[in-house]
Image (cartoon, rainbow, N blue to C red; front, side, top):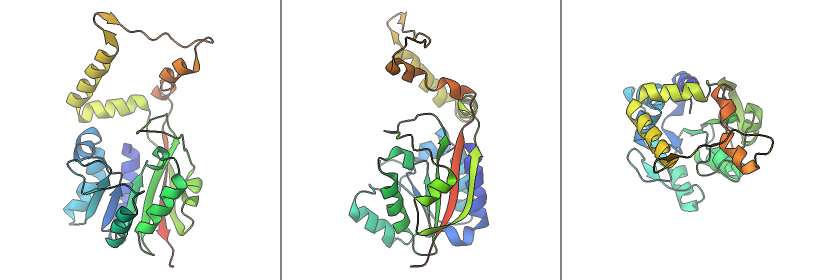
Length: 237
């Protein structure tokens, strides 16, 4: 999640705080991710909720510090567990581009909340390829994103511009310089063989498609990211 996106959802959470909690943060990542790698997640979303005593449950497929519920949405038992907890909202941020069948995942997410509950969903609209572990290049508009949830009403919709790869790298460097430098050193080691640096030639008309994949991110150093964001409310049964 990018900083402008986190701020937008933070405003939505303040506006509807009496209706959204307890909230499930689906695909939450770890505590370190939310407080160190992308500290704006905690700053704009979760710290304000904690200060008001509002409950947010963090769920992910990996067991790690800061993950309250570990499970896979494809597991019926886990889906039943989530539905039984009667969350009033689900935050599903930038998850659907990482699954093979987003429409099936959307149906499952909608089943978690009761009628009248809310879904806060985002997906990249203009964004580079970023596998985690896959990226299907699902890039919906807000209307297309909302259409995955036919049993809901569209309450809010927008496209958030969130800087570019250069500004994102700068934000991470400012927020956690030690981790960024460690990542950079690891990347440099992976691109060297002993004392010989592995150089990647600039793409030309003769460059193969596989080689071009190494350069897909270059335009995004200046091209702005755009994220589709929606707030949906589940209709009565």
